[in-house]
Image 1 (cartoon, rainbow, N blue to C red):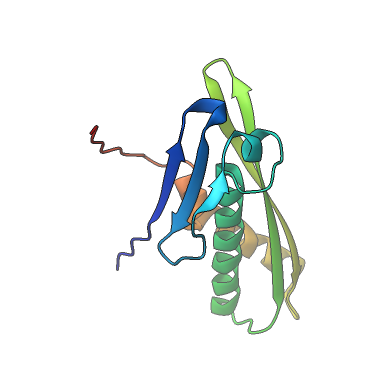
Image 2: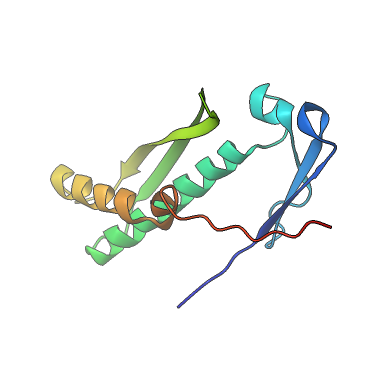
Length: 142
C-alpha cells in the first residue's frame, strides 16, 4: 500500500523581504503565512521547523498508539511535544535534532513494557525515518 500526500509553498519576493504561503492538500493549511520573521523572529505565522515538529509529534504518537493496541492495551492518553532545533553551521542552517517529550497514561502497562514500545515507535515512525532519508528534486525553470 502506498499513500502520497501533498503540500505546496509559494514565496513572493526574495530573501528577508519575501513573503511565503503554505497550503496542504487536505486544506488544513490554506495560504498560511511564513517568512523570515516567522522563522527567526517569532512573528505570527508558521515555519518549516514548526511543521516538522507537528509532523514528528503526531506520527510518533500515532505509531505508539498502534503499538500499544497491538500489545493488548485499549485505553490511554498520549500527549507528545516535539522540539525541532535549527542551528547555523559553516555551510548555512541545519536541523540538528527533534526532541520528543511524551506524557502518557496507559492503565495496566509496566514501565519496562512502555519504554520498549515507546522506543520502537520512535525508531519506526515514518517521520523519524524521514529525518534521515534520501531527498529527490525535479525542477523546471520558466
